[in-house]
Length: 59
Image (cartoon, rainbow, N blue to C red; front, side, top):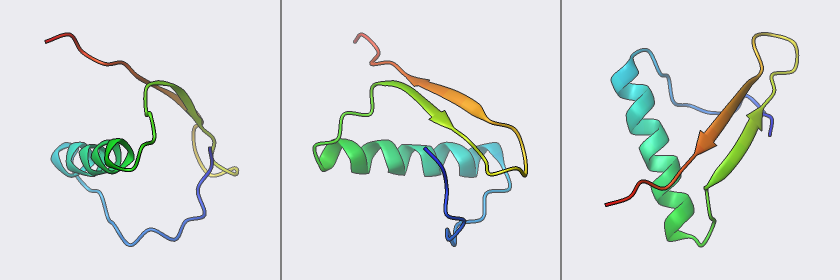
């Protein structure tokens, strides 16, 4: 997974990050995309590459 750098969203706090992540996960679920699993995010060469794991929590 990479980015094209076209997002208009500016994230400058933990709260904004959590809200943006929630929107992405909700949109994925509502559109039939299963977000569970391990996702790699690689920057072109301007920053750190990261791995994100999405796990469904038990009720």
